[in-house]
Image 1 (spheres, rainbow, N blue to C red):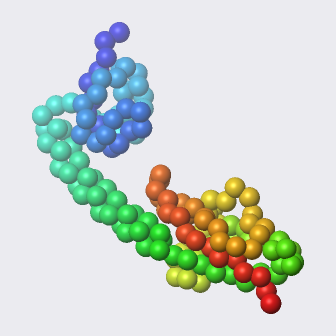
Image 2: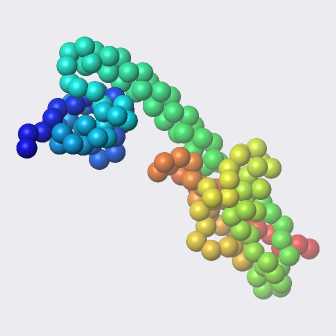
Length: 151
């Protein structure tokens, strides 16, 4: 069966980006891409229309990427401190969890949710710890968390 050429109006994962002309099976185009308005038939009028849309999308993506890079750079300089109850060996009676780190970030003026804090396991020792914070997509920043024992 002959493939159909369509012009993508949106970014479609594993297929292409906005403005790309791609060859797909007719059923995929007829049953998914065209009804979902993800693609249009590849003709000159549609190419002009999609080109304008692609330029606008690229400008939005560039602005978003600049904002994300700024947030990553700002977070990289963050150092948090917390005072927790600990024994004489430096082991915490409780632990510092992702929720607690999110609270500390919010108190420092950086709004992140608990799910954005990447901890393999809760922190249970006094000292300096590196904590990864998910910003967006595959972008993340590393902050320093200093845990001190309560006097």
